[in-house]
Length: 73
Image (cartoon, rainbow, N blue to C red; front, side):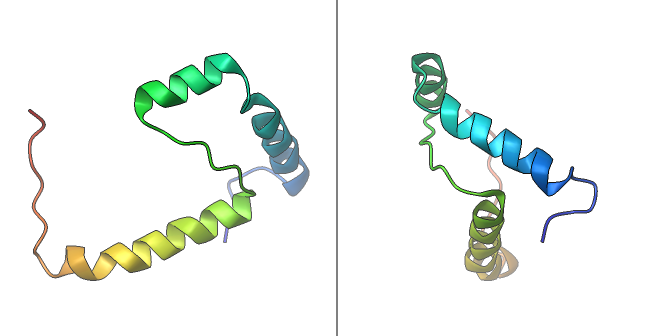
């Protein structure tokens, strides 16, 4: 579920369309590759569902205490 602070559905749809149209642009592909990112076009709802699944998947391991933060080298 999206927080109430986010804009209306029509605003989100326009932003989503603009993002999908920008994905094939070489400049964006270069920026994504530099970050090690892979574009996975999805609706805001699908992305939210993905985040919830990832939280559910990782939560037991994190809560078990078997995960430690490390300083970047």
